Length: 348
Image 1 (cartoon, rainbow, N blue to C red):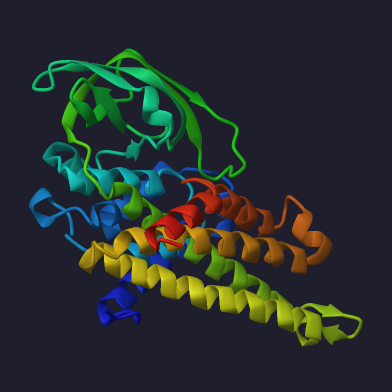
Image 2: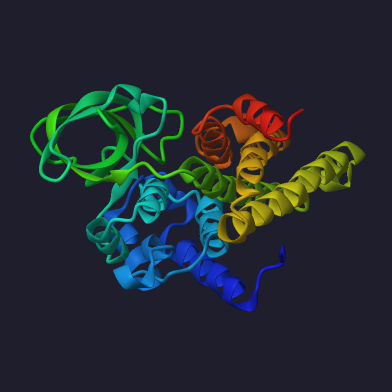
């Protein structure tokens, strides 16, 4: 196990960081989802197909590489459905499904994955070998307004199956939700006899991999927020001194840095476990969401506070990090749920 990035992973990080700095700087983040930027992200860097197997047109990379990319998209607060498509891709690689994975790798398909427990009332009727109809209401679907395809676990008489639904088909109603994080939308999706296609039985381990992917994004948000406030502390003068010279500020920044170091180690280990050690993955994933999500929010909160009054204004970028951190913290359930699961896994 290596917690230090390889040369190739460092080059990937540099490429993604450079692209996002030019194509999606923070002032542009406020404009929301940009289809052209998303297309370039896939066309020039192939990020949507990063973990898609090579036989389906993807890069065939591992979770360690995906975590590097997500850390950079998180740091840039990339708007739009990239994380939603990553979630769907994680589920589809566990089945797998050639048609959708090929479309995702080529950048033709924007997909999203329905999250539990919202999928508990989704049902499939019809023959799994042919066309099926899907019914149910999904309260919060990440990227639900931008996605072309919804991947949703649905109930049949034989158990839970993964089902693909064309979100532009008849029987699908999408309603945009007003969310805290305005840079990344969610939607309520109602399926009223919508045509679907059964991909296969639901595979184990998907939830753990989603947790690791989200933690990687949270690590990026955390790092960017800390970097921004450290830079500010070096130039902001109050009462004749740089605020970074005050003991109280230094202690706060040191605490934030400690959280970054711990979060980075946890994410690197969890990504390694997703690739190399499935037996250790459940505990690593639970730890990632139990610690990294909370640490990300606390750093984003303190980053906003250290700016003083200007940090509370709409014009400043601090609230963008705060809102993304809070939205991410509860996206897969609040930290207490993951702490309880971790305790169960460790038999505490």
